[in-house]
Image 1 (cartoon, helix red, strand yellow):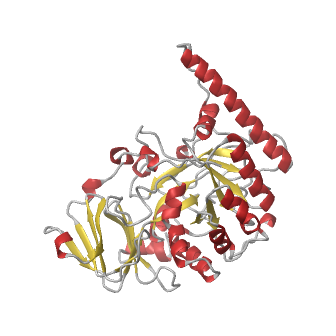
Image 2 (cartoon, rainbow, N blue to C red):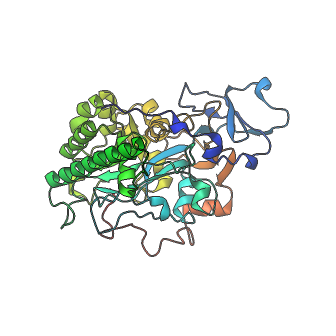
Image 3 (cartoon, rainbow, N blue to C red):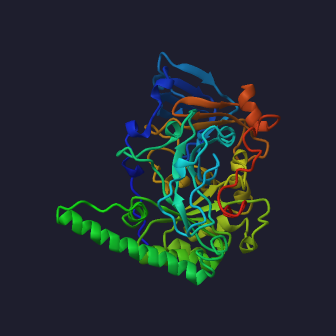
Length: 438
């Protein structure tokens, strides 16, 4: 399967919405152990931020320190890139409804509550970039949205945009038990795959109609659902595909090859059973790591060794929270558990950062500490894989968006009265009141 990942989807800095004015003076962070992800760790390093970008990462250097900079000594601390969560439901998003099993026309950004307490909680966990998805109760539940967790009051303040000014995101699909139910939903796994095939064939026919209209100089027909599917078939959007069982995983790979679409496999509870097939298809994997799988029969063979097995097979592996399945504040734990069960430290830390960035086509902008990239970083009290480590600060585009010393931020980090102010009514989205997540 040819993935054809683009280089950051051509996102321009202007369209990306950088809030460079928030950082009026350069910032120098020195003395900390720096984990750049791309390159070896630096025991006593220096990171310089200016105008929302990283301008230097390396050993301490007087020549790299701007004369007008705010300088902070972080000796004893650790700096790593802002983390990338490839699969989250923060902000209470909802996509498709009960009317049909495939609804590519729905856009999750029409339903995200940017004032949700889940967003500052994600910042408290060191997450800076996130793929917000509708649920998995449908074969196709809608279009996802990539966000920078900036401080803002509307979805436009957080939205990442392409150079064309369009919201950046993918498409959410699912198979297995979640999407199986009474008509108009499929009742079997075979019917699920058949419905997906039929839908993509319709989209291919629509593409021919569109191309003919263009060739004849006639108005191009509009169809929101078909247009979204063509974004998938023509490589502009990635399919983020919920799948657990080994046979369901292979079905996704088969469909992706048949219709030549890019796919990221999400969850893969039985990914260890088909690791070689996943690696051979060059399909990236976004894993969820749980203390206990629970609640879903098709996740009964979940294994904490899956990260190691997929890494050894040669697959690209990232982690996700599926928040609220795993709390965003505990994202570091995912890598720590994977390492405990045999995954390498290097690949596990990459799985929190750069691997996830690749799965969102954002590897040129986020996911590592490198000159020219967005100034997104996390300051930690200790090693990222230690259970005792705390997120002290989170920075996005050169602006500090979380500070554990700030009482308001600390409330979201440690909990207490008011920390979940908007979550009393139940924020699980769409069908089944609890169906459609992991």
